[in-house]
Image 1 (spheres, helix red, strand yellow):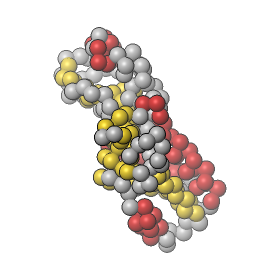
Image 2 (cartoon, chains in turn purple, orange):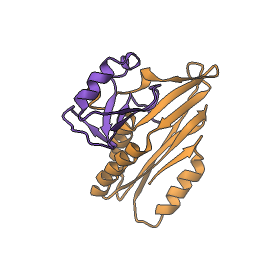
Image 3 (cartoon, helix red, strand yellow):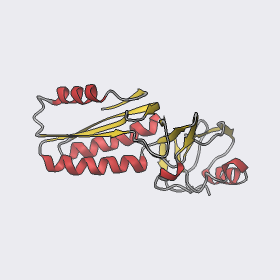
Amino acid sequence: MVRVEFLGPIQKDALELEITNLTELATILQVTPEMAEWLENSAVAVNDTLVASLDVSLKDGDKISLLPPVCGG
Amino acid sequence: MLKLYDGALNVPKILEDWYSEESKSNYGAYIPFVGTVRSEDGIDGLSFDIYEPILENWFKAWQEKAKAKGAIIKMAHSRGDVMLHESSYIACVFSPKRRVALEFIDEFVEDFKASAPIWKYDLKDGKRVYALDRSTAIKGSGILA
């Protein structure tokens, strides 16, 4: 089971999913209506490290975070 | 040093504390940047969400870059609401010579704007509205699309 958290302005509760890689997560989120506006512009972190591709395997207990566009300061 | 505060920053105190901490450290230059909430588009203020684990990793990486140049960085940021003419962000660089600090504060603040996991909202008419049009997608965004 991995936990998926949606940060900042994405108004969505965390998910607990039985998935083993990010491609499976993409498949699930692409058919989630409230995520349509966020997938193009959100970055992805696995266990608080940003990742640059879907080529990441996941293990039980991993935490995935989706980070929409930022503006500090 | 990275420190987060609830609400507006106490600018004089933070700048003075940082100065005092390093006044005997033999740095020739202290370059602070203070960000202030300006009145524009009828806002009453700004509000901020922060994701601390990644912010801390991002800051550590910049600390290492600063160290490689013989410099140090410090940063303070607000969580929650900050009203007009208050400060939500202060960053600074101390370095042996001015040129390193002047260049480093520019690079550091620009990357902060583009990469630090902080989300800004306008406070207007009693609502908290995400400032999407002023926000930047983090490098590598869109891999799930």
